[in-house]
Length: 315
Image (cartoon, rainbow, N blue to C red; front, side, top):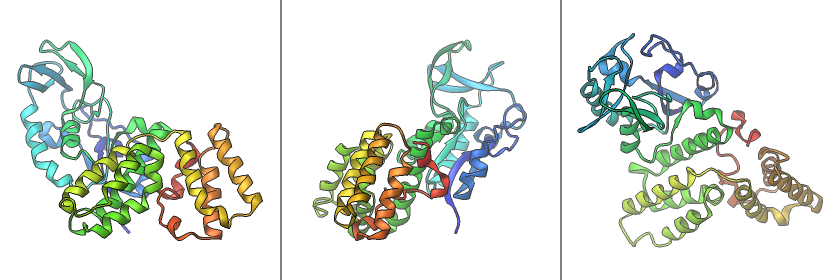
């Protein structure tokens, strides 16, 4: 089985494509995520024809917008980059996520320095030219910078979103779209939605109550926009506790009193920050396996990504 297609800045795979001939090898990407993701590597600057090594470039603000200008001089590489972007973007529609190199005037997702025409920094809220085009073209696609994946919560959130988006693309989007597929997707992800945003959870369910109120494709577009917005929100301990308590309600009749007591104790310990999420979730999964509840057997909240990633051990 091939991995989930995910884009990545080429330098993060250890390839020597940076302007100085170096790389920014991410061992987490190549040694851990590569077991589950099929990476599609792109270096916009190299593939726009700038070569290796090459002069460093940065973003400069001109009257006609942001330009990619060499840091020492006035050579403008904006047209070459735009030509590359126009060519490559249609080829990225099947990706389920993208990992970008931070601080790059082409790939940086946020906090990129913007200079004036004289080369002085005027603000630090820019976005790399390629990254900006990517995010505008595919606003639903999970995108993250490699450095931010060192944060346990950001890493867990990004990977959870990639797996959920992959489910949508494989089973609902395009030719697979049907009322049945849409409802089944929502059912699979109910507890995830509840954990990420109870407000959006309560909006998206009723949205599917009348599937004939508008064209199904339009309804699906509105649904997945709301769904991915919800998934982009990091889950607080209190929200996880709320979702786990709802889930536990389905198991109450099949659990022995002592097992129920231990479950409640560990959920409360998680709420206090004394144990990671994996502890109460493992107990819930064990209870579900002992006395399976059909409704819970489909819930992605119980296993949103492969256990071997160990993401819930650290949140």
